[in-house]
Image (cartoon, rainbow, N blue to C red; front, side, top):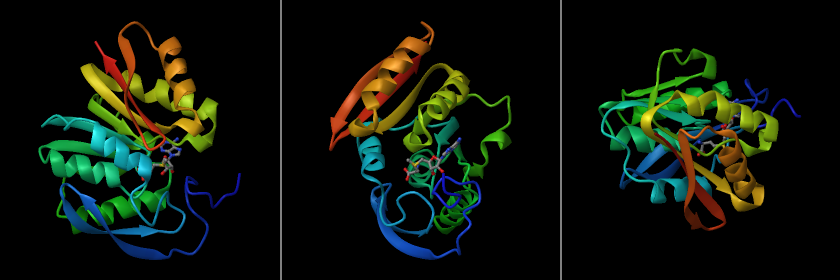
Length: 202
Ligand SMILES: C[S@@+](CC[C@H](N)C(=O)[O-])C[C@H]1O[C@@H](n2cnc3c(N)ncnc32)[C@H](O)[C@@H]1O
């Protein structure tokens, strides 16, 4: 795998930032993106589908945006729930810097952009939202699911968006087979080639 892929921990290429205008929280906002982060030119189609079809997040609690990139999901959650704390997690340090920049530019103080290992171990999440990194391969994707989904609070939900062509159905089947009876998995929306999966914990 190339060391300057978008999910590399420290993209090795020169930083080229850009400003784009996107719709988030019901308004047009200017955000900063950069080369070597996921979808730098616009909000990814899958992320748009997730934001459109998932319900409004809870008002409070700790939320997880697993694989935050430059932060569209984190920014959406933080704007929707100013009293919640959004943990924006990524292995790409450049992406984390962009989330911090974007949160500050939008006046948001409720986002913590950190490496996965830097989320305190005792935190449990009121909700998890993710456009997960499918291209890391099935083993790593499954590892991410079994690492983070058990950190949902009881009676809490995870919302995942996956492109059908990139294996949404196989991920759904794997989740149904792998997760204990405490969890229910369902497909909540189909749009533009993406599937929105809901994982609910009892
Ligand atoms: C499909 S992109 C989604 C990015 C962003 N949420 C969005 O909607 O534009 C998946 C992200 O997961 C990140 N990622 C890859 N491996 C990861 C890991 N082990 N833990 C956390 N994030 C990871 C990638 O760097 C990438 O930013």
